[in-house]
Length: 489
Ligand SMILES: [Zn+2]
Image 1 (cartoon, rainbow, N blue to C red):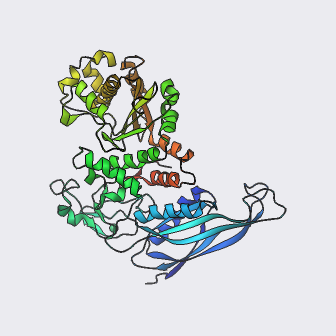
Image 2: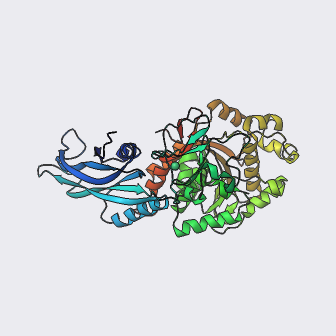
Image 3: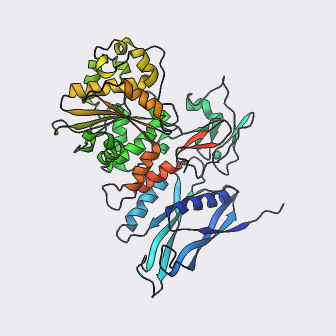
């Protein structure tokens, strides 16, 4: 058989982040056929001019990539970084740390140089204007690899008895999980047969789970992990930590997004932009300083006291208290109109959840008529169990808190909640100024906010990291074996 031993591919390294995705697609297509990058040769070309966005000159925009045949092929990530002499080292290091934690090593760093014509006007300047960074995945066994849309097979049909590993280029197959056999809810020891040793994942017909749950977490600096551990060790969620390794896990996803907004001091701006337009009080809010993840304050590791008091006032069973994914609020003693935002995050599951038996402390709640203008039966049917509980809790927190807290329940979903359902819900809410509002946004809205706002740390690359994470986020395979994406960009 005649196999090409070395392959030459021309790549547009690009001057815009959109090119990064094309580069990754092109490289990984070749790599997954059993090749590894051997050498990258940048090319200097004449470009720019009157009708182009850049000045006349010579620029490195393209490269010739030489691939060599290798059975255990690695996969690649690519970053295009605008060169900034003040931050270059720090920024490269941040990207390297992120990629290292996901199982990738920096393999080639190529300067993108530009030399302007003397006759050209103001342009990108002379010299290095960007850096092209190629990261190669480690191919040794037993090292975790963070998976995303660029290194997962876009199509993975399941065979009758076997399920192929979802990672591009991997030919490993596991038996298909059956109704009677173990599934991802079983202990890892029982799932040995469904494990790919090269990629460190358990494989089901529609999704995967990392052996090492921490692989899901993108913020792995010391202080990030310390905060995560504070939350993790105090939260009452049983088994939640183990599920963090799952592709469709909502908790690790929630943490990655909202820990970023909190640590970069972007929460207030986020809330103002996302819900401020419809809420005068949020639009005028001054500060957010408390972040509560699954009932636990990220700063102290304590269960948020207001939450404990409000659950009690609501009459909730302590073991089954309502638990929003995230709560953001201002500190006690702050000025008037302190925001109190309860956030519920949904990835692929429906925001409207059913519950067969509704506890009577909700249906007999003595302040029901202050919150809703319809009877419980109808309200639960339209809002679903979870949203009703969040609204009741938000109101009770504001009442117990007694310091002009302005409560909002924010629901974040992949698809937009249909307008007729939103208006039906809105019409059932009593319109008191102090009552909790209900707000809906999509992950696309969140992504747009992240892409267009810089955090507090100058030169920080975290915005790019979270943007890349959201773009790459996958949600498993559908029945036809097509990879589902959070943001079909
Ligand atoms: Zn594999």
